Image (cartoon, rainbow, N blue to C red; front, side, top):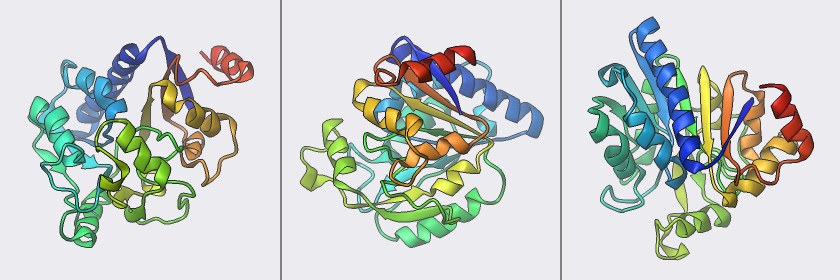
Length: 254
């Protein structure tokens, strides 16, 4: 895994977007279609805003897959990740090929249909984040590192649910759904590249654990260290707890 530390949240978003845009252009040029997985949440807003403004991306040749979604949450709810993707990516780019996770009525059917489409060809790049509890997508600790199913129904732990309240998506924890559809850890790792966008001081503990701790289901995003072309974008706040040894190793690899 490659680490990139940027000065602030905005420059992080731009740097990650520049990287992502080049991956998309290359995939379209080389294979005629870029297949992507897209994360949501407050941490991804600057990144997606910069990416949708990038020049020379043929969005008509991009196929998007949804990373995760709450079970039972209506599309119109402010916290709906489908709503988020429509507003922050699909409408801005005119993207026509997309697979949203509609988990309101029949989650198992959605898992089957979208999972089949997902597995039909390789994914060029997965955009991801890291949760305050170290989760990757909605794979809370202890995450399932073994299943090869493309999507799972998962139980959300309290730390994850409290993060959603803290980010302003829900008024209180009682409103936060207890289950979600999540892309599995193994499926995320199947992507040719992973671009992980993690700003803000509130993520510093999770970042430290995932980078400097053991690779373990108790720190789900630590598995990114096993991927040969994963890049983790941090700002100075989210990187603030990394040790001098880690920072020195990063400097030596630049």
